[in-house]
Amino acid sequence: MIDYGLANKVALVTGAAGGIGRAAAIAFARSGASVFVSDVNEAGGAETVAIIERAGGTAAFHRCDVSKSAEVAAMVAAAVERFGGLDCAFNNAGVNSVTADEYDDAVWDRSIAINLTAIMLCMREEAEVMLARGGGAIVNTASINGVVGNPAQPAYTASKHGVIGLTRHAALRWAKAGIRVNAVCPGVIDTPMSAQAMADPAARAMIETMTPMGRTGQPEEIAEAALWLCSAGASFVTGHALIVDGGVTAI
Image: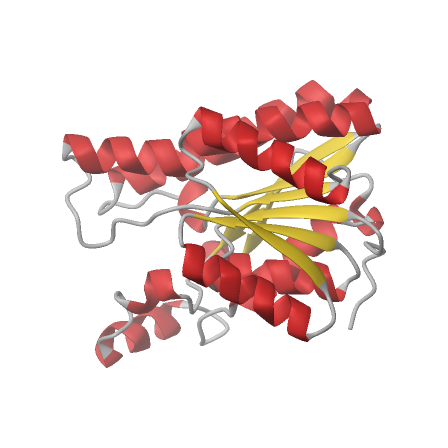
């Protein structure tokens, strides 16, 4: 296991009831951090905590709808109360309306609220705590759809482009204060969110064929990228959108 130097650190992970968020929460814990697990899915979040604790790690769960300002403020306050501060934050919660018409008002509003506005709300609260602590590291989940166009998903594409822009803004805003802010841009990853799109064997085969490495990614591979961005190994990295996609955007 890679030592990211996160022992005795406090990490907050949103969207941690499954998929990339759960993998990241487990990875932070294995690296020695105390992990504050957040999600709207209480059962999934509790299971993530149980997995961490069974492995000897330290974690706690807090239910939060990250699109709600008051709930985000309460989440960060609870993390500080539980673990005494905040060193790392992985703002990973998001939605992907694969089968919906994203030009529909309700679908558009939900996508922007959860994928983009929530990032601002989380960073605003996290940075305030980190500033008082003397610094920290924030990683936001964007997507390869934040660096390329997608003809089928206007809301998802716009929201993820927005995440990268917001990440760069925040990196500049807090650079001299010791807070590094970066984004991770996953390609197609085997998660519950992508399961519906890849349930058809032909669809999975098409995705694998269009990926130069010939396969989909695993949640743990995105988690490793997030941990590195939070580690001292990335001490001179800020405002960066790290693409982890098996080579798709290199074509």
